Image (tube, rainbow, N blue to C red; front, top):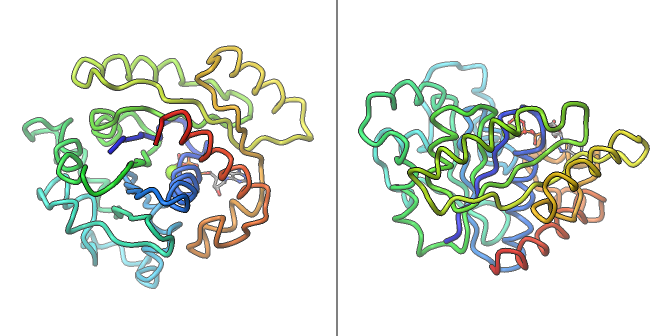
Length: 264
Ligand SMILES: Nc1ncnc2c1ncn2[C@@H]1O[C@H](COP(=O)(O)OP(=O)(O)OP(=O)(O)O)[C@@H](O)[C@H]1O
Ligand SMILES: [Mg+2]
């Protein structure tokens, strides 16, 4: 199982949208894909339709999750095999998250091998899937560090906007540090998101990023497409919501490039 970590500590750059739709596009080619939600916000879990069934309780801020989730895997040593769920996309499975994960970083601090908890859990599931995609929260805390310690490659979504490269240096430095405990970790690629063909700015960001990252940048660029932002509120992937949209086409193309690049 190849493990890909979708990370960028900058918020709102398209990590979850990419985790959701790239996972789905890969699964649609027949690969068995595990999507892992490492963000307490749980946007990936709701986007894939999972937590929607519990949403009527979203005003309930008690810390009790009504379902097993990644918190139980990290803190309670629950096996991944008893936590992951099926999704409406064939071959796509989800390890859901829950708001209670927000407390996990603090609880982990005193745990032994606190940065390797996810790695240990995923190693037991490696025969069941072709690849795993981990969606990280917008920070470089212990949750992201767990994902990087477990991962083979980091994927960095970059929004075609002002300050696009802000924080990227820090992310690369963190990746170098993690290599001390996970030597196989490398930068798998940079994914340019929310490209707006009407602005000169988007064009400039693409040029700068491709100049800086060279071949590490995927040639597929994800356009700004309102359908991509609508789909998660229905708990649907872009392919279930609007298969003909420019967003759907882009994520299918990205999946193809991805499969070639990583020989999946
Ligand atoms: N290509 C796109 N076109 C239009 N809207 C998009 C696109 N990609 C993402 N969005 C929207 O932008 C917002 C941020 O995207 P997303 O949640 O994927 O980012 P994120 O990096 O996961 O954010 P966070 O750091 O909060 O976890 C969301 O409302 C999403 O629907
Ligand atoms: Mg997100």
